[in-house]
Amino acid sequence: MIAIDLITYDIPPLVHTDTGEKALIWMDEFKVSHLPVLKNGNFVGLVSETHILDKMNVSENLDVLFQHLPRPFVFSNAHLFEILSKISEFKISVIPILDEHEQYLGCTSVFELMTSIANTSSMKEKGGILVLEVNEFDYSMAQIGQIVESNDAKILSSTILSDASSTKLDITLKINQEDLTSIIRTFERYDYVVKASFQNGAGTEDLQWRYDVLMNYLNL
Image 1 (cartoon, rainbow, N blue to C red):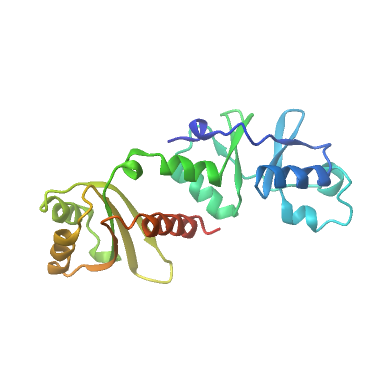
Image 2: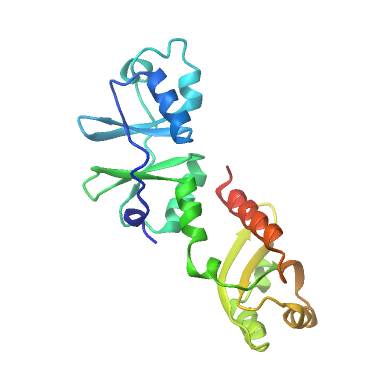
């Protein structure tokens, strides 16, 4: 998935002559805490609810309230991972999408990204989720894949979470089998730490865990 395919037209941009009060009303209406701001059709920055609320007079227009606005954005050909990284870096709920000439095309939101991820085939397909904890230097997706396939199963998707303060990695696997018992036993025979598993109809817990993992990744 790339940025151009993730644009949502449900969230309109502000213009520089709009008031802080209007921006707050729109943020509440569209359930976001950031909105793009345009001037003469050009993207000038992203305004946040927090920064507006810090101002004394929100009836003033954005030009008066802010001399400069942060300008995070992604280009239309940016991959989903780059979009997520940018959102995490700036801790924003909406990210503008520009073309190669930096002309504003639209924006996407955290909600839109979560919906797109949830609608991917690997998420929709039945199966179980396995979380492995491995040392960074011991990580081998080739070996992990071989262990899964030795149990007549396939990995539908995988995610790696790391912590700068640790040498451990959390490897999350979506596997096309709902009963992971034999796969877990095989991993344990190879001295893998099975941190968590979600299988056999543990749907609610499974979905909540996926949501928590995504929120942790986005660092929001």
